[in-house]
Image (cartoon, rainbow, N blue to C red; front, top):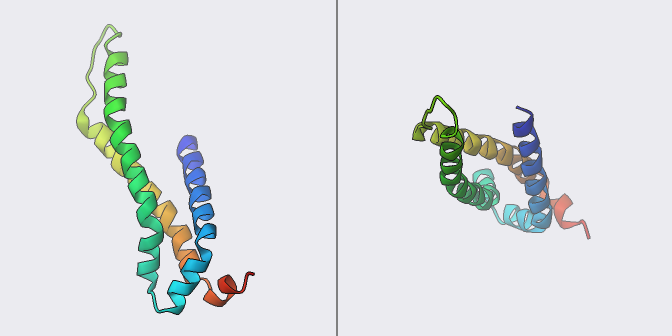
Length: 118
């Protein structure tokens, strides 16, 4: 649980940094009539793609390493594919929830405040 919380904090920091880089774009899009769902999709789509790519790399590698490690024990078991897929789905859901909380807060912000920063 601690490692999941630390990973969520890291993801929260990355999305906060990405939103700060695009704060003027968000303000302009909101001024021109973008809806909340459009802005949230815009902010979350890139990060969800990155998490998906990370899962595509981690799941086969995790399966391979777990099978190698478990073969050294006297009582051998195999890792089922559904365990790794369910862990990946849970990680993706946690990432989406973490991303959406910050993206919704940024999309609800007043566009005047973001555009008058300079």
